[in-house]
Length: 241
Ligand SMILES: CC(C)(COP(=O)(O)OP(=O)(O)OC[C@H]1O[C@@H](n2cnc3c(N)ncnc32)[C@H](O)[C@@H]1OP(=O)(O)O)[C@@H](O)C(=O)NCCC(=O)NCCS
Image 1: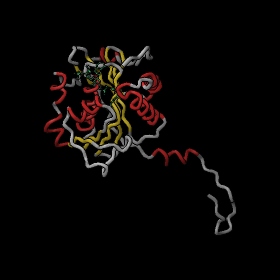
Image 2: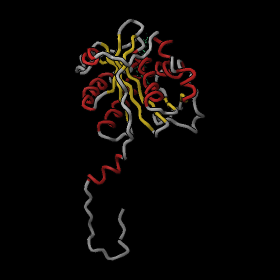
Image 3: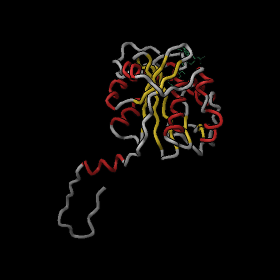
Image 4: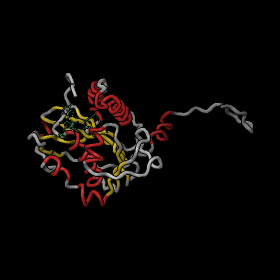
């Protein structure tokens, strides 16, 4: 759009340095406490390490996601495409206060979880995506996200929504989550229903859910050996889900 200036100006052109635009597009980041590495013994006896993903791992994670978004079954395509954009959003600093964690089993990538902070109170869950089926990898990872919100970050609400039946089952059904009236409240993922866990509900009912689900608690006393064994996400080979 162009209009004539209502006053005589000495310079008709202004140059803007992109370094000055960037703070406006990024916005100031909140200081988020990192997720401390934790292990959980799955019901089949395997131990999964859940740790924060590193920014330098994004390209490898994108390679995994590219592979699973080729699958049309079980909503891997739409969830994969959205996770791909969210990982890039983190990498390119176009997502407000994101967090990403990975589940690793014996040095292999088992799954990814991510979300972001709307503000200091509301934690918005984005996705849970697994590369190993069965074993309740996804259910445990989803629980870790809620644990992160309430126990580590001190949030008061955890919002989710679901594209897939399996996702709905591990979140909404298994945690008996209530939802806000729809369409008055809409989740940022496609405007779908917002399901939520409040702090009171977490404290009274959900906090011990990992034990019910897989028969084991999160263990934050992780050995150096396990950390080391799962430090590097290997490049993906053939991925089938
Ligand atoms: C949703 C998701 C994270 C759940 O992961 P999960 O908890 O590890 O569970 P799975 O989907 O592997 O399996 C769910 C159940 O169906 C069975 N199952 C279903 N499809 C299966 C398959 N193709 N291979 C093996 N098991 C399968 C599992 O044994 C399991 O049964 P159980 O609960 O009695 O153990 C995972 O299915 C996934 O990444 N899906 C695609 C992305 C997605 O939908 N994310 C959530 C968005 S809302």
